[in-house]
Amino acid sequence: MAEKVKAERKDLENNKKARRDYEIIEVIEAGISLLGSELKSIKSGGLSLQESYIVVKNGEVFLTGAHIAPYTFTGIQPPDPYRSRKLLLHRKEIEKLNSKVQQKGLTIVPLKAYQNEKGLIKIEIALGKGKKVHDKRQDLKQKEVSRKLDRVLKRQ
Picture (cartoon, rainbow, N blue to C red):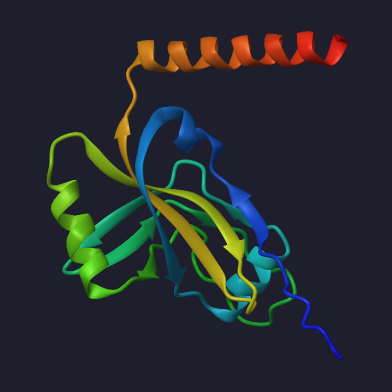
């Protein structure tokens, strides 16, 4: 009997800064509308989510500030690397995000981009609240303590 081998998702880009700067409240998976050359560029590692954010305009959600490097083997004029790209979400998800963003201090940030089992590019976005400086220090202290515990446990 032939067994189906389930392909795992392939991470293309992680936004480490988002987890450091924001307290993550809720995570949602979204599709992204891309051009062909942008898709090839992302699959070859040309995506950067640093300094990018999510904006809700007229009932639509856009990824703004993400950099997709121009694909070198395209014969046409490459699109603007920093252009806003539409995220694909259900209407209820958009309304829910928009209502929560209206609250003070909440924002939507991209966490990671990955390729799912079907080969589609997905963006993991999160609703987050900005961390204060003392919150960041507390997180660093907790990480340091857990590292020390791991070292002690390895020695024994």
